[in-house]
Image (cartoon, rainbow, N blue to C red; front, side):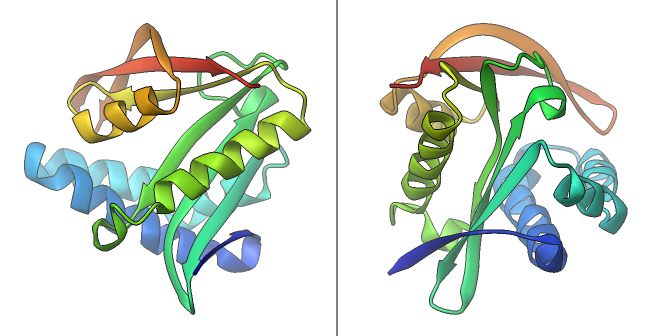
Amino acid sequence: MIDIKVASIDDLLIIQKIGRETFLETFESENESDNIHEYLEERFSETQVHNELKNLESIFYIAWDQEDPIGYLKLNIGAAQTEFKMDDHIEIERIYVYASHHGKQVGQLLFFKALEIAKNLRVPTIWLGVWEENARAINFYKKNGFEEFDKHIFKLGKDEQTDILMKRAVV
């Protein structure tokens, strides 16, 4: 059984490890090594993860399979949002799940947690950005009612990539 539990500052090393490892699993084969490692050093440094966990407008949840952390969800509200910073929106910044647990509904459970939080906060819109080359994730979000509404540039090291911005109503 998969348990979804809110993360705290005490989970910093778990979040850092899952973030680094799942990012590598997902994107390493399709990107230059230097860009991947620059991004990992910047976005998953101990200082960066610490600051994100301490931010009151970011919420983390860890998915557990027994004693093993297997993925996490990061939500942003208010000024913590990476793009829009509108009070009536909530952003899913990350749903990261180890490849070993793909197809086992872990991502779905994390998404349901995001939707539950959005409903509790009474925001009408939930949104996210997803790399245009990540067909698996795009299909997952479309299956869950998201629609494309814009694009933006995502910097992976020195490489500028296009993210599709998607949103859905919170109902």
